[in-house]
Length: 84
Image 1 (cartoon, helix red, strand yellow):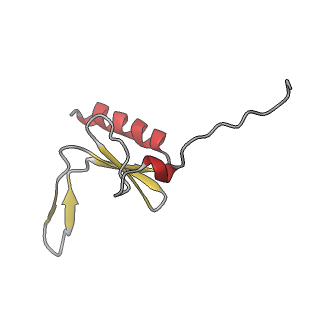
Image 2 (cartoon, one colour; image 1 turned 180 degrees about the vertical axis):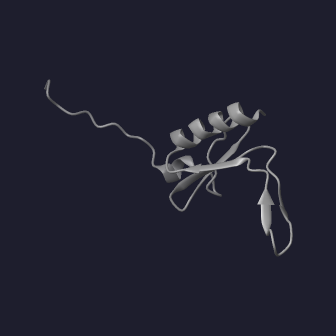
Image 3 (cartoon, helix red, strand yellow; image 1 turned 45 degrees about the vertical axis):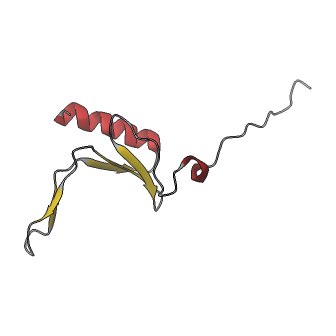
C-alpha cells in the first residue's frame, strides 16, 4: 500500500524526564520541565538574599522557554554573550 501512513512512536515527555522532572543537560547546564516550561540553570548559578529592599538576587545564569530546542538556543546565546 503506497499511500499508507506509517505510525512512529515517540516517547512521551514524561518518559524522557527523570523522577524529579529533570531532562538531560546541555553544555553543563541542568534542564528541567516544570509547569509547561523548560528551565535551564547554569553550572555556576548563584543566588543570595540581599534583604527586604532587594530580595533575592541571582547572577542570571538561568533561562526558560516553552520548548527544549528554544532553551538550548538560549543557553548557546547566554554562553556566547557571557562566556563560561
